[in-house]
Image (cartoon, rainbow, N blue to C red):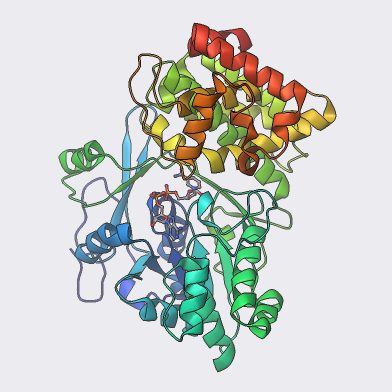
Length: 491
Ligand code: NAD
């Protein structure tokens, strides 16, 4: 329980709780997209900083933008913003800790004006985001800001009419306009999504929206707001009912929405902040000048390998990441992709032993405690494949290097996108291009080239004979012999 100053007065055995005065914690950070990952990563780092006695002004005000965030609003309101973060070790040990850094939560659909004013408030110095890779208004073909992305025009119309926008970009841009008018000064916009150059992507979108709202505002945003790039890493699966039950049974702790994750965590961050930042390096964050080599390593080894095991593993009958990673044939296939196809495209990564990093990755994937589902990994396929895997393919094609395993992964996605597994059971597609990709995947049977003809996803890769040939031959093998045999050929 908490005393009137917000300090925890009696403990729960085996559970660390916030020992600091939450009532005295400010709201220097506004975070949009309070899902599992934010609560396992940034909110955890800020909690660790607060627990070490540092930076009381850097507490977090969470913001939910989507209608579906009403559940998070209700759970956090009932728990005074507290929630449990549970680390899951490979041997089944659970290490729970109550996180106290989320000191406020605003739900934009109820009151967009409150969100705008919170971001415009002088105390707010960082706006951070985890709104998923596909949430950024970017044209996948050009990498540029896309004003026709869903919701952007509606937000611009709302702002022009003097009413409140409702999307993440509109809310922030409206708040930036007010900061500029009021002389409040700039802040930092910090994307924590899994994208190469996540800060650069955020810069293009926020500057683009600001420019369309008003050219002077656009110029001010381009000049004054900073957008640090970062590499973020901690596998955080969706919370299952069994996680809630385990917490209640083993620790007597009832939490409406705990977060579970692996013990490993990493955050490499560019030091590019317009209005100050917490001393993140005190809690293990690597603050560097150039995050690019770390991003390449993470996106092309971890995220792309997740794609490599997601579709083919599912087709072979697995449902969890650890099941695939523990299958020796798959493990060898994955390591082959990492060593032969991904690694040659990386730059030297200061302070990292790549072989050890890859070993650790396969161990992390094999952790049964994490119980990460292939469905989660396969969510948003078209965005993830194009962001994580296809850059490797393009570089290898340009260099004359191997692409067979990556082509088999794309073939696995095509076979998966047909909508039924090898036993004929339906596969629910969770992808914003699901309908189109399923139609193209089915057309591929009679019309070779159909699937790769989607230029929004593949650009001109479909016309590369070497890649298209490897894709088609892997796909024919998937049709005739199935995923296990296809993977074994490439292991
Ligand atoms: P989640 O489903 O638990 O939460 C997603 C959050 O994003 C929700 O609050 C949702 O409302 C919000 N959101 C989604 N689309 C949005 C939009 N268009 N506008 C505003 N808000 C939007 O997912 P998660 O596990 O928290 O992952 C979120 C992102 O974090 C990932 O897409 C990835 O970029 C990054 N990430 C996740 C992990 C992981 O292991 N889960 C690891 C590293 C990075």
